[in-house]
Image (cartoon, rainbow over all chains, first blue to last red; front, top):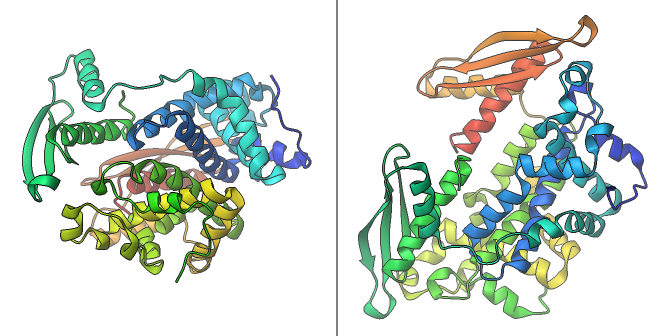
Length: 219
Length: 219
């Protein structure tokens, strides 16, 4: 499959596909810009397609779509491996097949489209490449407490405890603070806040899930 | 100072300034989108203004510009605190002065401008607000090894050790692998790679700095 974009300035495309092992200039700076653009364009797609999802859910869905392995898959679909410029060491060790190198090149290519054609061209290209992947995401995901519980169970680890640590405000506008305590081996405690105890627990579970995601642990 | 943007649909601006303590709908979902857009627009500014900066340097500079405290400052400059919609609990406890609430509202407002006026309007607005801040950044920063060393010294901690762990490729295209070992209390080891030992060391130091930044430790 081809990238549905025709470069005016092909030197930008070439630079995007030049790995640092091939010397300088290379695609590392473009990768920084492309990563940010990709994050914004995919964020907008999720914002549109998942109107009920919370911020935490959208973060997790985006991480699924733009993690290194997922982007390497997109890069393979575009057959970027054949067009990479690599140094001789990486060439011999098969760098054109490596997820991280492919993912970085794809991100750099997103920046190249932006620099060459502007935001709308970049957005159209990314949306075209990710439309099916976004459509394949679950529509309404399970709530945070359920997801955390199921994942801990799957690891054979103890289930989290929820402890009410405080409540403030008048009766008609109470705010509840709840700690979600996850035992060893994770040993994470996170506070949640909400207008009911149940919402505060969901909020705390959401925070634990976000930390696990940051640590690339799951779920 | 006013936001240099006039909304066509003012409900978007109102939603952007509605904190979750005021109920639903609130600005949490918009904040997700705004955070991503802001990251991309500021990335582009740094890409343009710091043509010699590495990816790691641009990441760090961006984190300086868009961290919670920096965004709260922008929000105060725009006097967003007076226009926030907060629940009664947050109102009483002075939520309109809190960095996190102000920063989130600013991010949501960036998304509101995008949704109302499109990317160029959003980009112009953000660039206007950040131009002076970007111009005030150091032009060429110290190299990664120097920054890491100075920061460790300032903490009174031991200096990192660099160990050559391997070299591959033919003489004219050698690739060096170096470990940067940071002792207790940090206890971080990171590998770097480069076409010279010196570049591999810089690369390894850069990776350590990136991890410290992820862990919000510094420098």
